[in-house]
Image 1 (cartoon, rainbow, N blue to C red):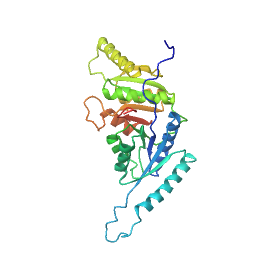
Image 2: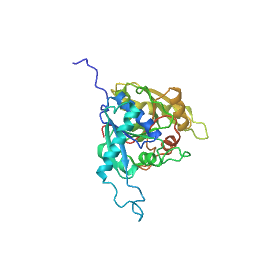
Image 3: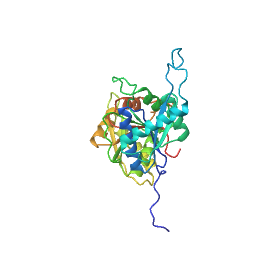
Image 4: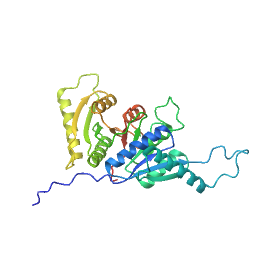
Length: 296
C-alpha cells in the first residue's frame, strides 16, 4: 500500500485569465490585477479589446469610405500592445485579442468561445459617469457571462500574487460552487482561504439549537468541497447582514479577493442575487462572482 498523500481535490487552474480593457484608467488597474493573478496561479493572460464603427457612420454627412475592418483591427492591436507594454512593462507573455462589435456583446461572445478561468473587468470604463459605481459593460458581463467574473474597483493596488481569499457561504448550491472555485484558486496560488458562513437572524432571537445546526451544515458543506484538497480553510460562522459581514471579514484579514456565488437560493439563472449585485456595485475590494467550476 502506498503512503503517498491523496491528490488535491479539484482540477488545476489551467485556463487563461482574461481581462477586458478599453484604454481607461479603470481597465489599466484591472489589467495589473489580472496579470498578477495569472502569474500567481501559473496561467496565461489573455487581454481583450473591442471596437465598432461610430454610430454616426450611416448619416449622410458621415465618411462613406470607412477603413476596412482588417485595417482597424491592426491599428487597435498596435494600440492594445502599447497599452499593455505601458501598463505592465512588457506584454507579459499575454495573448492580445481584438474583438469587433459593441463591447459587452463582443466580450461575452469571446468568453463563450474561449472559456477562460475568469474574466476580469474594471468597475468603470471610458463611458462611465463618475456617479456610477459600476459601468454598463461590467454589469452586463456580471449578469450574463458564462464564466466567473472578477470586478476590480478603482483604487486597487495589485499585490504580488494572491495571499488571502474570503468566500461567502449561505448554504445554497451557488455558494457551494463559489467555495469550490475559491478552493481551486487557493490551491493554484498558495493563498489562505477563509469560508465565512453568514446567516441573517429574524427579528426574534434564534434558538441556540438552530444556530448549532446552521454551523454544522456549514461545516459539512466545507468538508464536501474540501475533500482531499491541498488547502485547509478557516470556517467562520456569524450572524448579520452578509454584505457587511463579508466586507468586514475581508478587511480584517487583508484579503486580496472576495468570492461569492452569482445567485442565492431561488434566484433566476444568469441574473445576480441581491448580495452579489450589491457587493459588485459597492465593494472596495476585488470581487469574484462565480458561475461555473474551473473544469466545467
